[in-house]
Length: 78
Image 1 (cartoon, rainbow, N blue to C red):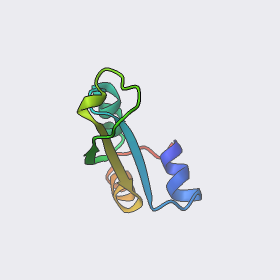
Image 2 (cartoon, rainbow, N blue to C red):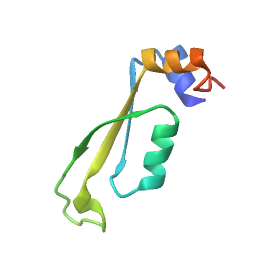
Image 3 (cartoon, rainbow, N blue to C red):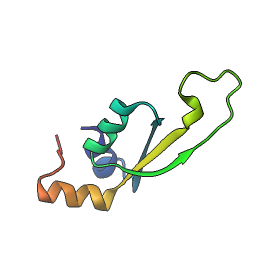
């Protein structure tokens, strides 16, 4: 799993993820891997696509939270 590599071999302290607010399936994936919603940005795009007016969401997962989830069995290390 990429998160395991990032936290164990890559030495990352935090992993960030972003998607459009309206993209519920991508948001669900970020939540399922243990990420937490940390904010919504409303950016001005030169050629906006439908849904961009609702903004982009930011998610994060810290190594300490990920390790806690792994030890509790709620996250995968493979």
